[in-house]
Amino acid sequence: MRKTLIATAVLAALAASSTVMAEEAAPAEHTFTANVTLASEYIYRGIGQTNRKPALQGGFDYSHASGLYAGVWGSNVSWLSDGRSDVSSSLEIDLYGGYKNTFAGGDWNYDVGVLRYNYPGTYPDGYTKADTTELYGAIGWKWLTLKYSHVVSSHIFGFTSSNGADNTRGSGYLELNAAYDLGDGWGVLGHVGHQKIKNNDDASYTDYKVGVTKDVGFGTVGLSYWTTNAKACGDSTPVYCNAFNKDLGEGRALLSFTKTF
Image (cartoon, rainbow, N blue to C red; front, side, top):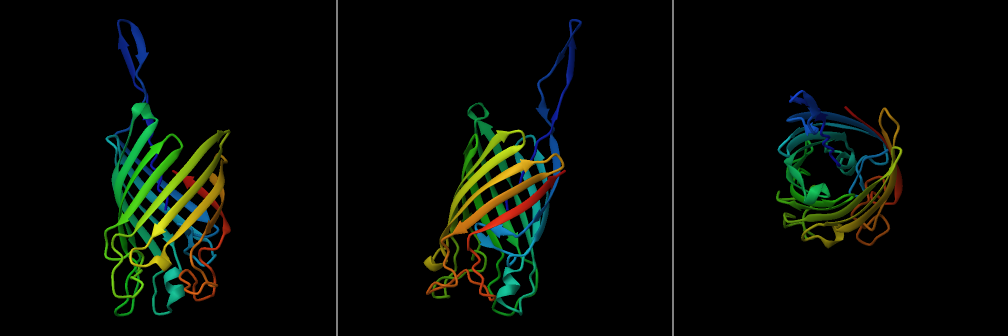
């Protein structure tokens, strides 16, 4: 559920003593962008969200020159209804906002904010909804970023404790991401993350991703490979095995096309 905020620049001319000088480019005070993605599957933190079927995703972002930002992002999902026929939720809508900036000459950056995952739909009585709120903080150096997300809602994505009686507030996700520009529109990326589900070790896991991207002018094509060590269908205590006996954390390729406006 990576969200990209893109700043635009304007050039100003300054005339003084019969000499015309151009000011340095300055970011626009208010920036609005939109994005749309078509993917072979929706994979989040290494776990499949659409049962190996395509996903249509998109969002809108606002950023201020001060570093404040906010946005909304959505995607089709099926993992909730795949697990239970009496659950009708088929959409994820994320709302987020925060503050980001650079320091040390621009080589370093930081980002702090809050993200709310919403899964509208109908649920049976007593069902633990997947709606989740996380606070996050990240620090980056050039093409490397370290990020931690901490759950402040009562549960994370509907998970309860191993005994089913306790909540999972305090769960966290630690990730290290790399995105390196090779030039000529090509880029490579790498990722490792660990999802800790508080009070439920069986649901905790580590995920990995490697990939390549190519800017083709009218959008960006991405090809990546995800895998995890999440407990799946063949384990004694399977967690990420859906009703169709598919391993949601099994290694597989992901193909996507993204257009930003």
